[in-house]
Image (cartoon, one colour):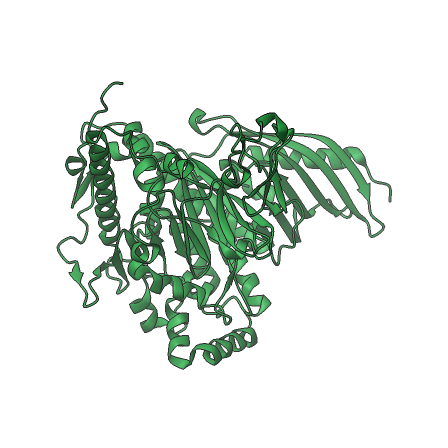
Length: 457
Length: 153
C-alpha cells in the first residue's frame, strides 16, 4: 500500500482565506466524506416525512444509502440499505409505505424495523445463521431534535445536543411558526444539481453579500409587485451575519425585521413568513392569534420576526424561510441539492399554500433565483481550475466583527463572518480525523471505519 | 366545429420553435390571459395547493419570467441555452366546451456547453379554445428529469 499524502489543512485554510484546492482536490474530497459525513452528525431527514408506521424515505449519509423508516413499533430508524447477505440494496423506491423490505437477489426479507425475518432455503446454512444478528445494519447513532433526524456513522463522539449547540434556538423559531409547534414535510421536494463542489452551496446559503447582484432581477420583480425595496442586503444594512459556533452560521435578519416589520416596508422574507402581503388579512389575523394563544404575545412576535432566518446547520442542512435544504456531495465537482418546502401544522390553508408558491417563486430548478446560484457555482468551479493565484479571499468585515454577550460572533449582513465560521469548523473536523487516523495507524490497526465497526458489533 | 388537426400541430411546432429560438415575446403571445403553465414536481398529477411544483405560473408570473429572462441578468441563461425541442406523438381531442386538448411527447436537447449538456423527456399537455385564434390556456409539462433547461421557458 502506498503511503497517502498527508494534507496540511493549516496551510490550506487560514482565517482570512482558503486555498482553492479545497474545492478541486479529489483526495481532500475523499477525506471530507470520511471525516465529516462518515463520522460526525449529519442531517438525514424529518419525522414529518414519515408520519405513519411503515412510511419510509430513501436517504443518503455521505456515500451510504440509508432507509429512513418508521417501523411498525412506531420508532424511527435509519437502516443501511444493504442486504446482509450479498450487499444489494433492499429498497429502491424513493418513498412509500412497507411492512417489509425484500432483497430481489436471493429474497432475504427484513421487517420495517430492520429485523431479518425470511431467509430462503434456510436449511442450506446448516443451522449456523443467526437471524437476530443479521438484521439491516442500523446507523450506529441516531438522534432527533424537533423532528429533525440526524445520524452518525461513528459509535463514539459528541452527542447531537453538543453538536447542535446554539443552533437549536433557530430550529425552534423555524418550527414554532406552526401554531401546533410542528412542521409538515409532505409537500414534495425540489431537486437540482450543479457541476461544482458541495461547499459552494453551503457557503452561498448564508452569504448576504451576493443577493443584490446575483438576484438583482428577483428584487426588481419584488419591487414591481409590492413597491417594496429590498435593502436588507446592502452594504449599509442593519441586518447581521452571525457565527453560532460549531460551523452553524446564519444571516440574522432579526434587527432589520424588528425595525421594519410594523411598516409596509417588506422583504421577501417578510412576505413569506409574516402572513402579510401574499395572504388575505383574515387568514393572517387568524394565524397570528393562534400563535399568541399558544406562545403568548412576546414569543409570538419573536417567532414572526425571526422564524425562518437563513441558518446553516453544519455540515449539510439549512433552514431558509419555508424550506429545509439538504446538500449532498456526489463528487469533488458534483453536488445535488434537495429542497423540502414545509407547511405549518394548524396554520390556515391559504398561508400554507402561499408558502409553497413563495418557495416556487425563487427556489427549485425553475425558480427566479436558485438556478442563477447553481450557474455561479459552476462558474466558480471552472474559474478555480486556474490556480496560479489560488487563494479565495474571506476578509470581508474581518476588521469589524465583534463578539456578542452570548459568545456568538457578529458581523454586518454582507460580511464573511459565516464563511469564516464554516471554514474554522471544517478545518477542525478534518484535522481531528487526521489525528485519529494517525493514532489508529500507529496502533497497527486499520483506518477507522464506522461501517466496519458497525458490522462487527 | 371540427378540429383542424394540422392547425393544432403547426401551433404546437411553432410554440416549440419560438421557445427554441428564445423568441420570448412571440412565445408569450401564444398564451391566453387565463394562462396556467404547470410543471409538477415529484408526481405527475399532484394537488398544487398541497404539493410543490417546479413551475406553477399564471399569466402575470409567466410575464415576470419572460421579463427576467430578457433582462440579461438571469445568469443561468447568460449566454442563453441553445436548445431543440423535438415534439412527437401528438394526440388531439376536442372537448364539448370547445377546448381542444393536445398531448404530445417531447425531448429537449441542450446543444451547447458540453459540460452542462443534459436532456429530458417529457409529456406535455396543452389546451385552448379553437376560436377565434388558438391560444394556450393551460399547459402541463411532466418532466422525467429536471435539467438546467428549466431555467428558461
